[in-house]
Picture (cartoon, rainbow, N blue to C red):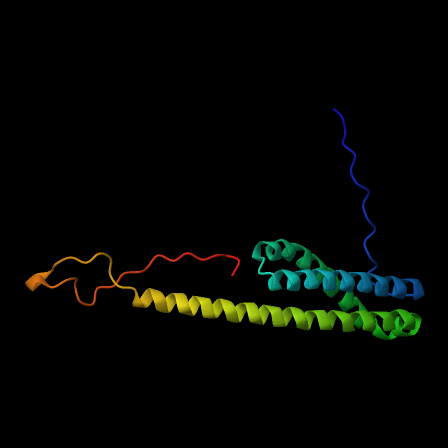
Length: 164
């Protein structure tokens, strides 16, 4: 029986901060994570503006992965804020700068999401109204030779282009 080689295990990040190296490492991980989240959000915003919903769906797992890593490191950062600030002030300043860029990208993303939601709600509203107003299918003669039956309505067939 042959054994398959397994990838070497990565050393998990330290869950405590006790020196400058730990503080710098934490700040670097936060910078990398925030940069990655910024890139994913920028891609999502671009896809929203291009009305590419299938592309957006493919970003969700990556966004979740970066968000979870960020929250873990950010909680560690908050827990040891005084020590990190004293041991790695330059790196903390870099984290602040990268967060500023992230917040700008996040606001753009939220605006694009709000616009897409508004358009979607308008489209659904128009479709629902059209369906309510749709008349019954083929008419035929009814009682007293009247054409059609008063008040009969049926749902209309609806086709939606996902690129809307």
